[in-house]
Image (cartoon, one colour):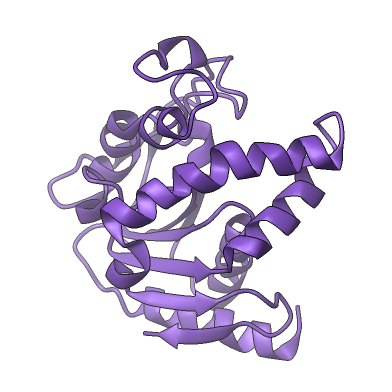
Length: 223
């Protein structure tokens, strides 16, 4: 991690640590596909663990997908199916966020499905202390039904051109070619995420917005 990046992650960690609530602090890392959400969340969790004795809970929202067989409202492979059906909003709320929030019983799960959305996985029930900090990353974290359950939202900004370039480079490993991956982004991920931008305006609603176009030299656009 570069010095500039370390300082920025440290500043976000300070914001998270300043959340002194009667329940665990729920921090979400939101943004486009390939924005660097998982990397940023991992780095934030590492900095927090090195800084505080408070327990740090690390969860990936990709492990709360709806089973592919239950995504039936929209055509398979459509942007609408991606935005409205891929993630199990009820499970994210009821099994993770609400139990850690005001009045929650602190009993939460970290996973209900593998990332392919085909194999249910029961992580078992974990019990969180009241002073814990949850760091979760994923797409569409501020959808209706979820937004009110976050105590701190960090939105990572990158350009659409970055989404296409980074995503195609990343996903070529499991698709037939880089061009096949790029086409998937053009027709599925990017238009699905544009639905999110239009409905929610997530960058406007986030507590902190970070320019993450350059991984080595990110900057805070708003806090």
